[in-house]
Image 1 (tube, rainbow over the protein chains, first blue to last red):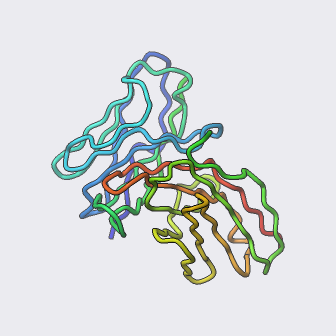
Image 2 (image 1 turned 30 degrees about the horizontal axis):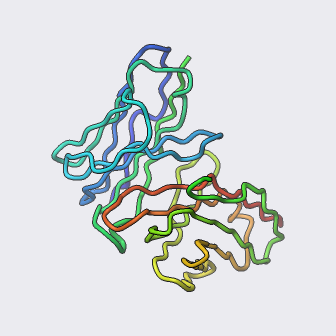
Length: 116
Length: 112
């Protein structure tokens, strides 16, 4: 079974630009979560999508947005990039149910974003 | 107060010893608890999850949960150099929530 796939692996952008990251979940997984990881803050929750609906949202500004398609693939967009947005962006998928194995997250390899 | 707290380490243990990693959480409503391992330059990998008070064993790993004390721990028996990694504690805040809150991780170093 293929794992979680994230593209691209690396991105270099300049301040003010926007970026779109892509995530394909494990087959059969309906929930996709996005996390930002930095050395200082660790893993910070961005949002979670389930069946094309945003179900949970973290404490990030509106510049960070996402969506999920009918095949469960998800994209994350960051507009008006700032230097502080430089981070590893991780996507994780799960079955998305409540309790038990349904909550287990499986992570992709991440997209390393550098903002210059 | 951080929602999930871990000692950043590094925790250094000799090969063959027991490594004990600890985590505390602030939300008493938290229902499920996870331990992830992250090697340098890699993404987190789930190694244990626990929902009920007590111990849960899987091979060399034992997760311990004490909801009254809001405390979760991970024991690694017979530690190997390949166990050297950062261990992340994660807490899901309630049923119906897919919002794992992660600690900043404890770096474990196992010396041969």
